Image (cartoon, rainbow, N blue to C red; front, side, top):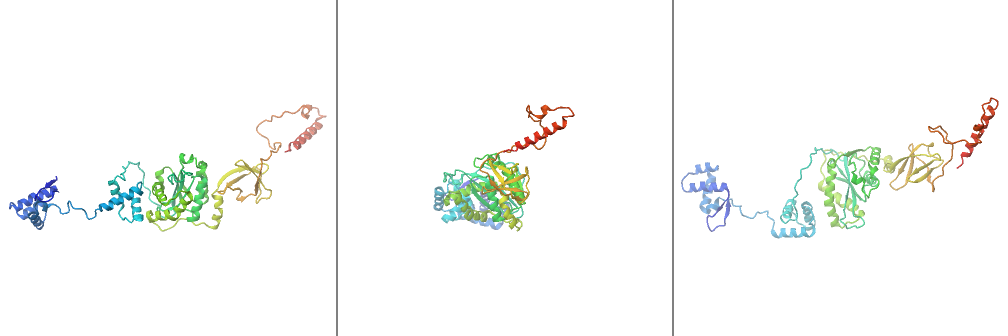
Length: 455
């Protein structure tokens, strides 16, 4: 299909295509007078004027006159070889593990080299810095349309990763909690911590509510075995129960995802952050959780949202602003709740400690009633009963048991055997002694009750 052009002999050899070879045959016949211009134009499907131009070029340049003039020439957009070598040197020295898009941004931002990301990708592939990834055949998942308004749905997840690349030996692995808006793709809030525990998640959403307001819905996973059993988070087993209860108090609908693909937006965000954010923090010299959170808030999140956020279909903001009443209740809402019973001596046990309820209370309390223990984020304890916080104090030691007789009958027979001097053993069925014996038994039982109420 291709043929070399050797005419004239003093010119450089260039490849002639099949179409150009056909034109050569027709133009040669036209030049030799075997056919006229109209016939040549019909065979080549060209105008007579164009055939005349080709005939003129053939007379002047021979075979090369029928070859496209741009073939073999260097393109006007070809990158200068010195510039390409400089780009390769910079990437190898500073950005060898960067992707083409991030490397392109850093070349423009820090080195003043403005090229498209596809050009940088081609250079990196040509010099074996970047390797093309084969696309895997993925499982089928149906498409879900974005929500229409900002704040309507937040996708939330935690990501354990070596975010500081070993620069912090005391923290080989940290956890990034992040929330992304479904309608806009904005990072609405993100925060580094040591784990994804109930306390960390509660603190995250408390700060989120103070910053943005209360969203309508939250999409999160069901917390896999890896996360529940993670050594850094000891209370993850109860996270979903406590989290759903807290969000229900705020009127937020919690949607548990059955697969990672269901909340794909936040999963892709984690992949992006594990690549892009790690390298950005490396360039900024960030190596602690405190400085990382400052970097997130002041630098990375504003850049990310301006670069990757989209315009929602609706301009409404579905976040509900915190009113004074809700704001005052956040401490109780974002706390761990446990139900405990009131003992006969008005003590309550929780977490191996004993709490004594005071005599003066905001409401009437009875023994054996159930109360709610609230373990706040600042590790303080509150005891709640019928929407009232009770007055109490911590007991230094475990209270002594009260010895008392049962006040109700039970289903089990008593194992107590009357002693030999018990009136029952001297009981007589004679009518004459019956009244005296009944009085004797009654007095004995009364004395036993008094003696048994000793502490």
